[in-house]
Image 1 (tube, rainbow, N blue to C red):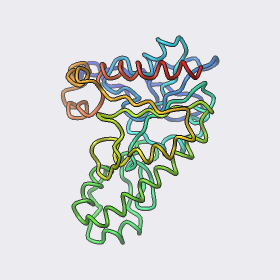
Image 2 (spheres, helix red, strand yellow):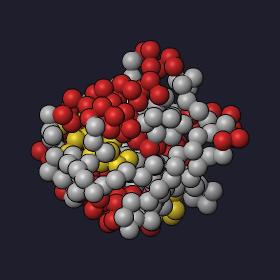
Image 3 (tube, rainbow, N blue to C red):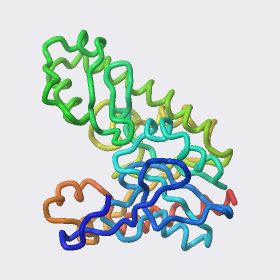
Image 4 (cartoon, rainbow, N blue to C red):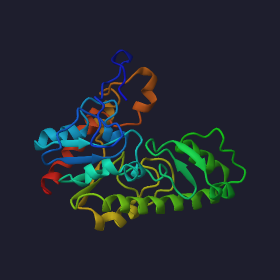
Length: 272
């Protein structure tokens, strides 16, 4: 999990919580006293930044924050890790970063249970929907969706509709397993769109109607979109090997994490 310092990377102090086999960003927090929990993907993990927003929130509130974010994780990551989910359920407040609808096992294809961006296999339903597609050399969900969109636009629309419904169902299951006080975090370049049918912008396929459907299950939605200044600093305020410059450009930099923390702190204070 850690990137060698000599390669121009960071030490993420990888750690485990409870009986979970997943590796999270450390240093490990003391969870014997009240704490907050942050769930999400690579942005929550804080890849390429020294102080992710979980750490900044912890410093501002003076309360431990368990950073349960994981690289390329989505709802499936937590629903298949009962130990991590139990830790999140015992938090004072849980914050869930909204991630894309493409990174989940569904009726059409399966993904890796931890690295949810990894495409594993197509189901018969997907092969019937796209009979001309060869899935042999497809290894990531983003590549998969790009290939399918080019193959058959009509079939692709049916697929996306199914993914969005699966995401909604899976998020409802996840939220039901979390503490009563829970927040959704929208961390993206712009606010939630009225309609999302494409991979970009991230998070893929997630729109305002989907978020509205989850509102009865959460204490609120925190929308964090980076300011022009924070965007301009990316990726200048990140630490990464030169070979990973393309990946770093897709993730929030240190200034964005500061802005996210500034949005989360007052929302969490109201729930304390």
